[in-house]
Length: 124
Image (cartoon, rainbow, N blue to C red):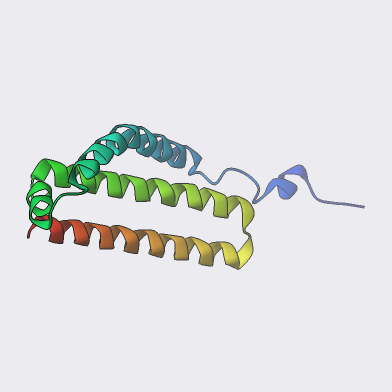
């Protein structure tokens, strides 16, 4: 005979309290990437095939560097939120926590390396 109440069975299975925030972050990054990715493709496509001096002069423009940085940061934040969602759905226990930490570390390292490379490129 099972003496668990409905409330006791549902404990730990309810809302985590962050679903709406996660959803709106995903929507915001998606909408920003709809605008930023075509801008990045056009700016990056323009730089492809030119000499190093021309590329350095092109990326030293603040507008081009800002478009590239925003696309990089927005894309990686969007990647992180989506991978976090997949990990939370399919991985359990301590592996979930360790995987979420590894994903966050990888994404922030990738973001820092990309911004450092862009800064170095823009300031030369």
